[in-house]
Image (cartoon, rainbow, N blue to C red; front, side, top):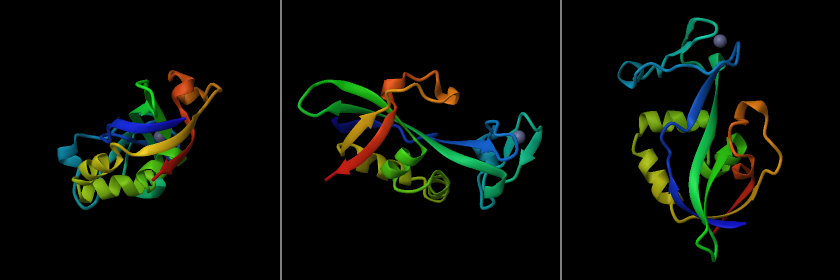
Length: 148
Ligand SMILES: [Zn+2]
């Protein structure tokens, strides 16, 4: 399927999981968490504060965007995870998070770049692993190629 991006929301596309127990980390309010040392997180499972060093957590993408199918008015909301999202954004989740923290305007620049972009995508047919089972399976991107 060939699609064109009509809308993309790049805010909060990175989630953080504890390196020890894999629970989703809670980040405190952005006012107190920004700065050179990076955000600090809290693991509700381990009940510990997680300092911002990459071996303390894993960062992953969940990117949702709206597309329209080529030659039709049909719109879809698609979801891209990790590897696929990296192809869209052009860097890893951790690199993205660091870029955005240092240059907040990155979000707007990337949105502008993606809006109107064409991709060839295939969608997952099988139900995804439990973690994402609440999502409609056929909306998750399995493969993606950017078209110029
Ligand atoms: Zn933990």
